[in-house]
Every structure is written in C-alpha cells, then in structure tokens.
Amino acid sequence: MAGLAAMVEPVLAGMGFELVDFQVSNHGRLLRVFIDKPGGVTVEDCAAVSRQLSRVFEVEGVHYERLELSSPGLDRALRKAADFARFAGRKADVKMRMPDATGRRRFVGVLRGVEGEVVAMEIEGNVVSLNLAGVERARLVPDLA
Image 1: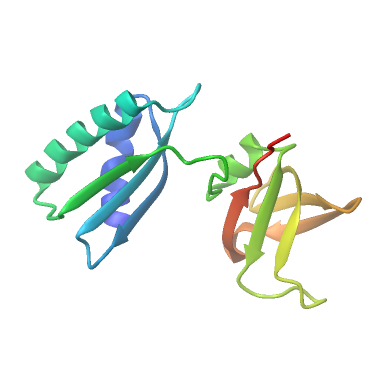
Image 2: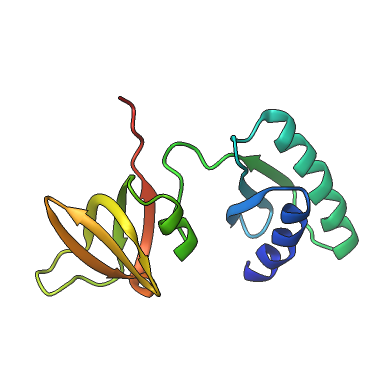
C-alpha cells in the first residue's frame, strides 16, 4: 500500500491536490483515494483525478476493480505532522496505540500545534503532549455550530 500511495502522491501534487488518505480493500480490488485542495474538492475534481489515476495505474500495471475518489470530509483524518499543524485551533479526536500513565488512550481536545514529532492538545484546560509515532488514528471533530 505504501508503494501505491508513493506513486499517487506526486501525480496528485502535479494536479494541485493533496493526498489525505489511501486505502486498499478487498484484497487490492478496491482502491480509495481521499484528496483535498485549498477551497475544497468538487465532483469534477474527483472525476479528473480518477481519469488521471486510471491512466497511471494502467501504465504501471496496477490491477484493481474499482477506484473511488473522495474529499476527506468534515471528520478529516490527520496523519502527518503538517496536518496537526495546519489544523491547530480545531478540535480533534486522537486515539493512541498505547495508553499513557493514567491508562488513557483516547484524547479529545483542541490542537495547539506540533513541535518536532510531538502534538500539543488542550484538553479541559490542560495541555498534553502526544508522540506522533504513537498515534493509532486521529480525526478532526466536525464543528456543526
């Protein structure tokens, strides 16, 4: 999967998009690509990227049955340090692989930034530091107000 994501990322960058997430399901038969760009993603953007990736996959010999393109949605996944920095000030839900000293694995609070490989989150008035390498999953919490 990492090889496919590495193949897709420069293609998307050349088209002005960011690769947010890449998923392979059903034994490689289903490929899901989540893309973003400033101002958001339209249906036409997804169609254009789908056409381009279909050509790239054909040339590179990538076999699949279905390719799905989508925007990351309101509960966008956060994967890279740049994601946590970009969305500083927004509420996020972070689940760690291992519990902290208090046994806590899930943290919901406001992102306060990133320094190196450590994410700062404010939770109930306290700032906690979370190591990026220990993050199992992280998503923005939609602000529906």
